[in-house]
Image (cartoon, rainbow, N blue to C red; front, side):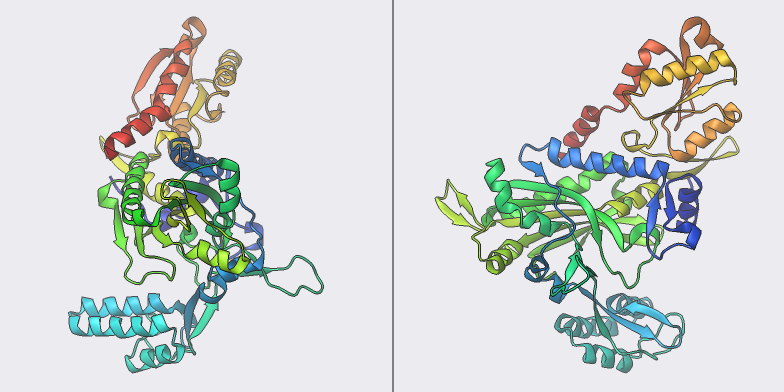
Length: 485
């Protein structure tokens, strides 16, 4: 089995209607993308699967859809106005811009690769000290003294080091706008500022979670690697509110649940791993990333953090409103701690494509197909008349109309049957139904499996039950729960 490069993945997504560059007829907009007909279905299925995993299958997790625009005080209280930034530097010779931590990480790995272990640890320790203090002048001096060079120009001709806030500003009116309004850079704060509303309307007890899927916006200075890092993207977040004394238990619980969840998507141990944070965010006691082995290396897909009581405590302080939970067992009020699971939907999408696009040889023949898990495939079933004959077309459309209420089905009578099979394989359709003269005479269709290419005969009346078993959520989640237990 041969895996594909990122360049191959990008080409495939555009050719087969998954992802297009935004504003393509105007030469695009950097780091912004549109989801095509197959892409929007795949993305919707991923979001639905995550939502059901969180909200439908847990009796103590509920949903929310908060607004993109919020009072600017939200972002002051959360620390985003003062802390949500990247430290950047430009190389004057190559005209390339670098995030300072990525540049230093690249250089430190260079030292390690060349066996300079002592300098490697010294280098990282000094740099992390300056980075934590956000001492821009010392960081610049450090680059010069240590002769950190640009990977392209091989020079140390750097600009001054700058701290760039990542939030995108907007305006609610044209005149006399006295405060900054931001497009939200994360969905979590919408959950925290609705904590009291949820408590009052849902009458729910700790521990409980609030889940949300939504668009967020970040003014990424360096956006690269296709949809892995963008300026407009979607997050799938769940904030789980707990008694502070149970912090360690619930952090480890959600670590286990979340990494096992990826087995539903055919992501297994050799391609996925935990990465423990060395430098914790200002709000976190614990933090771990779930990383996938992309064509460009292991990168974060999901973050799991203990955010402690940082967010709610700050919102309580800034809003001057009591935001606490009354514990009827302990007979006291307190601010709960929060365990967060945060998945980048677009990164998850890219991970699925990288994991599923496969080239294999069978009997000296090369074959490419998209081995998507059935539950998230954009098209579940293709109805294909063997020939473009009116009787076969009519029968095929009748079958389409019968199944369209239950599954995402397409009808296709273009090209030869072999080319239509290949087309469906390349968009990840699990099953193709061929309608031929047996169907007209006996109501028997031929159903072809994408992965094995094995063809079986079924009566039309058996189709719903056969397919429903293949796409059955209960079967999929029973398998997951068996893994967890």
